[in-house]
Amino acid sequence: MSDVTRILESIEQGDPKAADKLLPLVYEELRRLAAHKMAHEAPGQTLQPTALVHEAWLRLVGDGDPGWQNRAHFFAAAAEAMRRILIDRARRKLALRRGGGQARVEMDETALEAPADDEKVLQVHDALEVLAAEDPQKAEIVKLRFFGGLSHEEIAALLSVNEKTVRRHWEVAKVRLFQIIKAAQ
Amino acid sequence: MESQDAIFLTARDMADPAERAAYLTQACGNDADLRQRVEAMLRDAAGADEFFGPEGTVVGAASPTEGPGTVIGRFKLLEKIGEGGCGVVYMALNKE
Image (cartoon, rainbow over all chains, first blue to last red):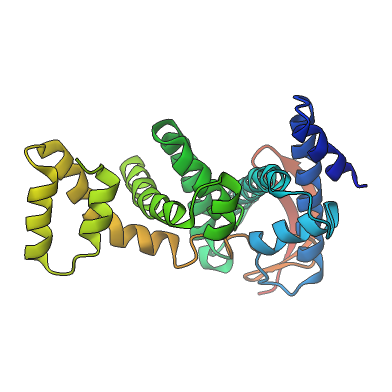
């Protein structure tokens, strides 16, 4: 039995400390997978949170079916871990683009990839905190979708609500986040 | 009374402006604040769709980790010479 499977079972049995152990393990695995992908793929390759999260699930938990509640704990941790990885990465890249001291040359903005997307990751991250205060369930759905790359169907199963509800929350949450981001500019 | 979310979602699917306005009048009743909030959401819906894209995930947002050998514009990164709170510093070759 893998460490993660064991932790998931402890969470299931109500061990309050078990959940704290899950996030670092999932985070490490995702970070490792992301770094490995980046090192072996052609330049211009992008990170696909959906693929990474599902690959991490297979590697850490395996093919067995540990039950939907365990899946829920795992994917919630994975979305949170993915969010941290993407935020760190976006911050690092934006810092790099702005230059880190030394004798520096102005770089052509367009030469560095997807600056808009890095800004976007950080904007959504900030706006999500505002949304979480207004409506925690919508914020959770956005995190699972935007950062975890989960489908509406998967999110519905994780949160024990129907898919239509997830879809409706998502449609409204997108507009609210867009408004929050617009207001912050 | 219907919730703000429900009114927004129903109104958004109405293509005919007159039909939409009539629905809003009926659904929001005398609540002018509610109507204003729903109308603001309707105005921002297209922008939100564009911002989030069809998938709505961050897919494609993160590009490769920089490292020695990475080419950025006319610079080729040679070796990492420092790292600090605000970034990583590389010695680079200016190819021009």
